[in-house]
Amino acid sequence: MTVRRRIGEGRWERTDTLAYKEEGSAPFKAITRQILFDDPRLQCQLRYFEIAPGGYSTLERHEHMHAVMIVRGRGRCLLGDAVHEVELHDLVTIAPLTWHQLRAAPDEPLGFLCMVNNERDRPQLPTPEQLAELRRNPAVAAFLDG
Ligand code: MN
Image (cartoon, rainbow, N blue to C red; front, side, top):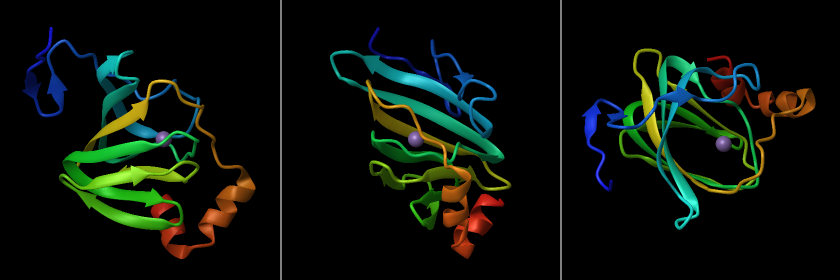
């Protein structure tokens, strides 16, 4: 089947809404995952993530890249040591080994498409020392504290 119709805000027919990650595997809050494209001939996946108001993705980094487009709501993202406001149709490129986290606004969800390689390395979580280093920047500390 080559067309899966949209059936609502951030929903497509015949597409399961999945847990973001295994519960307890990493810190995150109020986020779901849907796999929109996953075909070995294309060697990448396109996923849709939706973060509920006040929620956030895991603070992580990895060798593989992400290409992200915001398609619902607004929020902020941490990229390296900089915090950015993001809103509808903004594009975010997350380079290899860049610390990143997305947070929905307190009063709006944040939905985004995220393209990744099919085969990819496991995300790294910050050590306490790396977290302390990130938090040395007051803007980053304020972001991480929500
Ligand atoms: Mn990531």
